[in-house]
Length: 67
Image 1 (cartoon, rainbow, N blue to C red):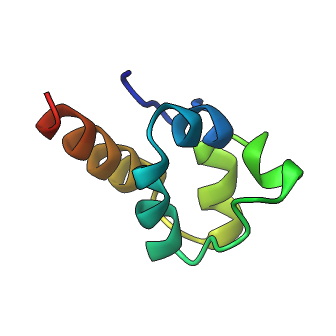
Image 2 (cartoon, helix red, strand yellow):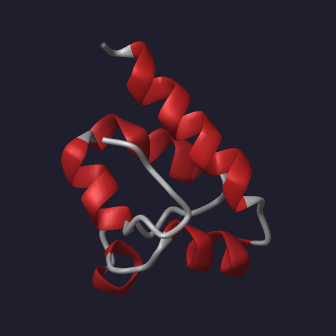
């Protein structure tokens, strides 16, 4: 899986639940909430005042290191 800013948080978590730690790092602790799971990474970062590109890069680096 390659994650983008348009990726839906629930899809990323379903692919690899261990990616939750990256969302926790930006203060997004509501990952079980239906609205959070259906939100794009870009939208979540906007709400939480964080950089979506940095979060996407961290998640993709983590996922690529697993191969």
